[in-house]
Image 1 (tube, rainbow, N blue to C red):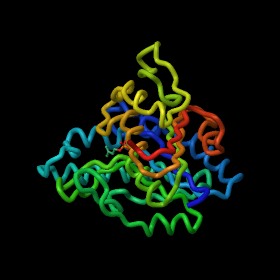
Image 2 (image 1 turned 45 degrees about the vertical axis):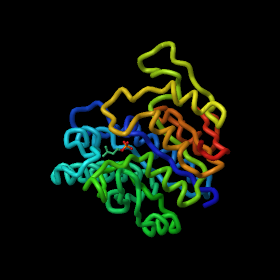
Image 3 (image 1 turned 90 degrees about the vertical axis):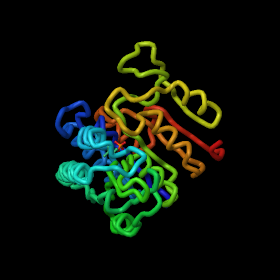
Image 4 (image 1 turned 180 degrees about the vertical axis):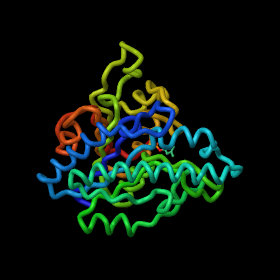
Length: 270
Ligand code: IP8
């Protein structure tokens, strides 16, 4: 789909990720909604929004071990998680609608099925129809039905790269709480150096430098994000990982201005 983009807003941006109870970061959501509204006025491009789960999903997924690679799963844990994610989506949508942005929540748990944690079936029509009628489909990392393990966790990152491949969208934006990729966690290590670009030549080296996320993240943090992206056989594939907590940065990223870390993959994944 030419001139289409997918924007993933990380769970650490959209929620208070270390909160004990599910808590939306309303300030960040409002900022991003404003930036999308501004971009919509200047662009006739299409946009899909995907978000992380943050404090609405990860603590429940861990408590109920929903991402474990076996079928002994708690049914109530599954519905508590999908319901919590629906609650998040409803709150996010209300904030976007207040800015006149036609964000259209489409529940990931109703649209995607996995086998051993990887998407094997999906229902494209609601997403395509939303795009065709000028809406912005909104999906999120969620608990989903899994053919082998009853339920599994499907990360927003996998949803994003799957859609990129199926809908042939080569421009992906990742709004995170750091200004792109660093050689170490910039929140903890003052020696952390910013990586301006990741490409075919330095991918393997950068990947080795990245550790796990500092929060209760069951899907792998920054390293997981970059691996997921690289593994997607869509080429050329362009992405940007930027700090979405800063006002106007999402607008800049949507307009293609230099923010964060740029990723450009041309050669097929090794
Ligand atoms: O935050 C995880 O999605 P992510 C989904 O995009 C749940 O990794 C429910 C933990």
